Image 1 (cartoon, rainbow, N blue to C red):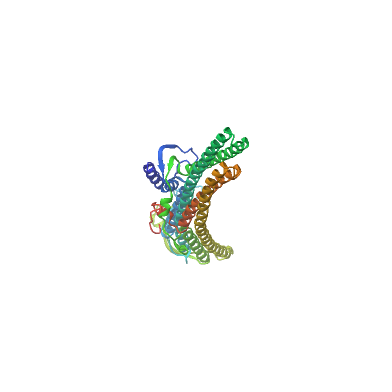
Image 2: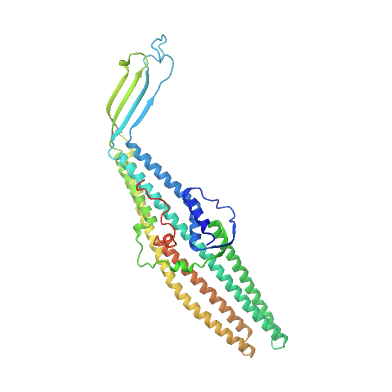
Length: 440
């Protein structure tokens, strides 16, 4: 495909930078270009700002995890006092006499009864949650891009079908004109044919407007306006068939909710640990400004114990953390329920779509046969023009309904594939938006 190189560049740029292309800019036309379903999805993923935002949130989560882990590392602090008479012992004013000079303090946390463990656990789970949320956002955007592409093809075929309907009516209009000129039909028949032709032309204009709107919607996602669009049916027919329910634990949306629940559990442990003291080791050095004798400088090494004797807010912090955990559990259950409902709806849409196609094909064929018979009977004066025009209208309606049913099935299959978390892989796109680096 002519857009292949552009797609590869866009995907590379999307992975290398969190700053997407301007989604508000007018999509540039690409003359002589073709695009396929996988290209449309890939370009959507490469430039959509939602993924840039998700990547930034993930980077923030990684930074928070690093900050939490650093709580176990030693902390070196200093203090320096500057003022009159602080660097000399010769002072007659009494100002700042015997004031301590600069000092260095090294603190090492030894044990805090689970505070730091909870902080690290919360940060680790949150970082994983952000990673799964990135994958979930990519899945949702992949579905959005695919459905936008299907809308273009849907309205493209509907416009062609409307054009065929107009041509058929114009041909019939020409035959009626000849019959009127020959005195075989009334001029009222020609007027009725003119009305139907103009109505069909209005439908054609509406179909063209719908096609243009669908193209603009897709171009807003992918950043280009191709001149041709490949048939998506072949790509979708390669999708694997799925039975039963998806493996919920492997789906990014459910996994993100699971990590949110674990993060809330870590907060509970952290809040409960606030009632206990912190144990640490402190090494210090202080220089005395009022003497030049190094033996008067102070060195210290001690075990520190810090904590709150009374702090009523700890009790409420624990309860708040427990409620956050319950909310996270409910969110996970709600996510599973939503996915199950989408799977059932897509499955029924596919099943019902095939039944609709069969019915519309029979209707279309019967309308074609009836139209041919009605035309001959109209010439013999056995059928009215209204019956003949109605037969032509039924051909158009059945064909349009068949096209709509076909693309309803394709759209439902895209949604069903995404419910199982396989849409990107089935289109030949990367299954992960990040390089897995363990726990960060």
